[in-house]
Length: 372
Image (cartoon, rainbow, N blue to C red; front, side, top):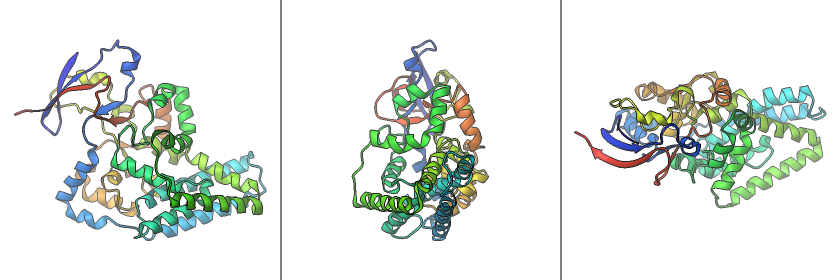
């Protein structure tokens, strides 16, 4: 079966092959495959062309380091407070969930800001401060995060270089209620371990420094204050990437959920210019939890301008509002966790991937056929 649709905005017709509704499940369960470049580069060029003053928003935000110092101090203080509390007690869990997970989510996202060199002018200062910021996480993380996250920005959607994407094995096994619940509870492990199985990066001296300093501080804490304190750091890190309100951003940023999810059979539509080849692949959230997460909810804005610090992303949206207001948005990170797990239309398949090869479900036959 074939169908021709007109892509909104580029005035070209694309002819697709798509499977019938009774096709084998392995054909229907597929990622959204795109042969187009990711949208952020184009939108950045369009915004800069219309609003060149946006360039003045780029650069580091020196005030961020003081907030980070406060969060790290808060975590060490909470750990000291719990040093004689049994880790499986309700008191320990409650503090780790309310204080620790919220603080460590801010720590993770501070390292995200540092990976873009947005706290200090010199990259090496950002790398070293990220190692300090890493301390409440309990395991070395910051040095590995930066190169993988840079690949995510430069090659968004690439099935081999963008390790934010779920693998085919994950999508096959976990695209059911129990599987999605398992993914939501343990998503911190997926984001930490998946990159090592998909793409290998070079081990550098920064990785070594990150490991040595983290292990030295961990050893000092355990021998001086006890192992329960270290358990607080580990539990805080786990809960920060589990069923926690702030953890909703992991899924909200790039998964195609709910009404944004266009079934593959939508390619059968004969409507003139009323359908995109693939849905949007980045989603912003403008709610109050941004105050705890360095405005990471401004995610379209961040991908468009990754070198604008968190404090200036709302100003970017204000200046270029006509570019961002029409884009689909996420209203609730808590809702995202619920919808992702319990809605049948939301699966791990709901991500946009790009490659030069033809894929099942949407094989482009004729591209770049100009229309009058």
